[in-house]
Length: 82
Image (cartoon, rainbow, N blue to C red; front, side):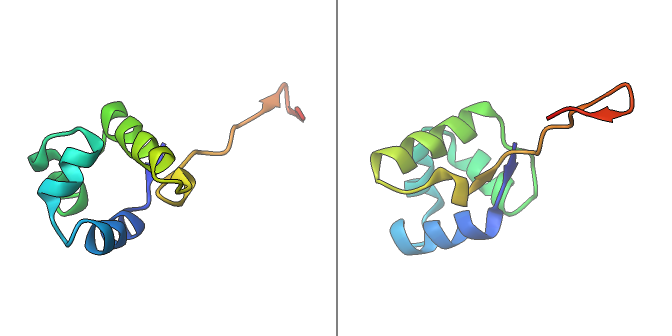
């Protein structure tokens, strides 16, 4: 999974008044972790992604705006599998 950091930063600015603390409480992770992910480029974990997905679902937003899934790699013996 990957994180669209600029979209999450915009969400934090608009919905959480640019507050790392408010965003961290909303998604259920430590404020330092939110800061490290957005500013220091640390890799978010599953708890971070689950928190974003739950918050988006509860607030009628599409979590795919913030989280992207890698495309599956489906090649078997040199042939593309559909």
